[in-house]
Image (tube, rainbow, N blue to C red):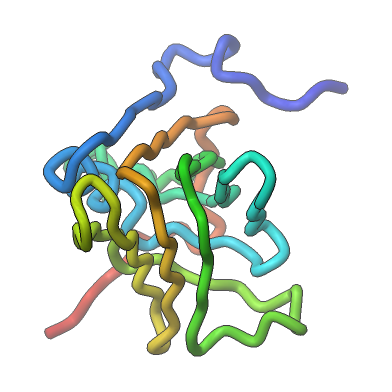
Amino acid sequence: MTDARFEDSREAPLNLGAMDADDLAVISALVQDAVFPASEMRWDRTAHRFALLLNRFRWEEGPARAASPERVQSVLVFEGVSGVASNGIDRKDKDTVLSILSVTFDATDAPAGHVLLTLAGDGAIRLTTEALEATLKDVTKPYVAPSKKTPDHPD
């Protein structure tokens, strides 16, 4: 038995890049409500790369998502990362499941700046970057969301 691959599906995987805050806003919308265990975060100091393996809700499915909500595993990668800081995350508990609310970029000394991944439960990850360079790539075939529900954000 082999893992599911996008090539086996009729849907096309997302493969997007972001080089400015407007591009990142699109990626942010697509990763809203993505969940991942704390153990799926990696910072490669030598390569200046920070990556997350996410279980992303497929918001791009539009109204069809209500009938059959889907998730897909995706890799979110940031290049040129010179520092990583977190708040509200127990890094010792590798089984903690985190959920992304938004991803934003704040230029400090353009093109350098900070990427802020805001997490549910008041957690956050801040990346110090030489310049904004992000990619979001789906790496598995979509699957039915285990909860069988669309994430909800009541007012």
